[in-house]
Length: 401
Ligand SMILES: Cc1ncc(COP(=O)(O)O)c(C=O)c1O
Picture 1 (cartoon, rainbow, N blue to C red):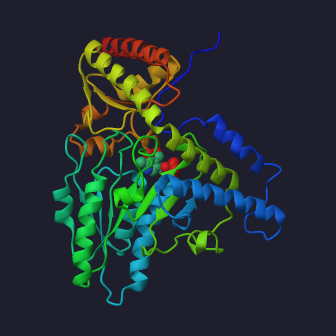
Picture 2: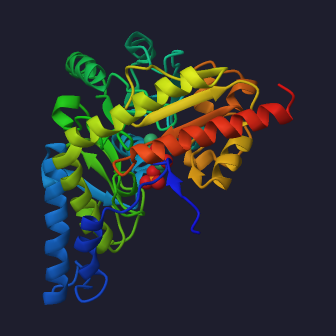
Picture 3: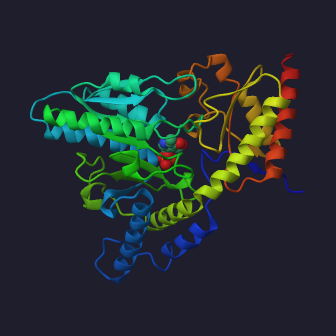
């Protein structure tokens, strides 16, 4: 008999939607041209890339020329942080060191980019704290703004606890502050959001968010891996970080990943069309699971706000159980979940996100992230729940708790 397999790790990656795969297929084989080539093969590929750029622009409510394709969100986030600092360094007449504001619980690729820039003496960085609910305070952020601040980077929805940040409000405040700064001849503050986990569920139109830079990734939205984009509002000062040819309007060198780009465009088109429906489906299932878990398993806490949270995320702390043990126990039953972010799995340090919201090191080790998706069924949810109950009971018994 084939082992039952239940995938509940959609924040880590998602399966490819068959419609996306169908759109991509011809660009691996017969339509293989390089979009930079001037002949008909190149033209065919370049038309496909431009169609995808238009699909992305429609999704984000921007001009196609404001979409720069990258290899994914890690690159987009590196580009947003480092590219902004490099642009400032090359434009600024006075040799002022710029300042960046971000949050304590950003994805590691934002935090590591900021750290590197800071270590190299290219910028100062401030980290805004996060409340127990997993949300930053706008006042804390405002208090960090200095004369030399050039970038604010705040993620839209957190990848571990799913909490939603007040991006629209921050956008409005920064717009006002930027108007005042213009009169005082101070540098403008660019506003970046890592919207990777929000795209499936939330409004990501850049004008309604008030962002200048926005990061997206294909494989979190039922698209392919190794593709994403950085939205760059027209006239935002930014320099490329990957040098070479003149691809992507000179902002990102490297032969374009045509099948990936086609798939990414198609996945954004589908995400927009099905957003409301998918929101309702996963929200209902998530609420059902949270309710039953809290009722039927002792010593469990939900991490992060219950309300200001994307609808597919459940992040739990279970007292007197090791997260690793739960993950492996569930895996033996064919259920895939995570103990932290995909990128920090295998790392035994407590999650920086849980630490930021005040979860102790010990409790952090008993945490589990369960993320649902558009293919999750009620049967799968029930199978997971029963498996979790069994695994937790067994582990607590072994530990004598
Ligand atoms: C919020 C967030 N930002 C960035 C990334 C990195 O994305 P990619 O795999 O496209 O590099 C992830 C993936 O885990 C993420 O969840």
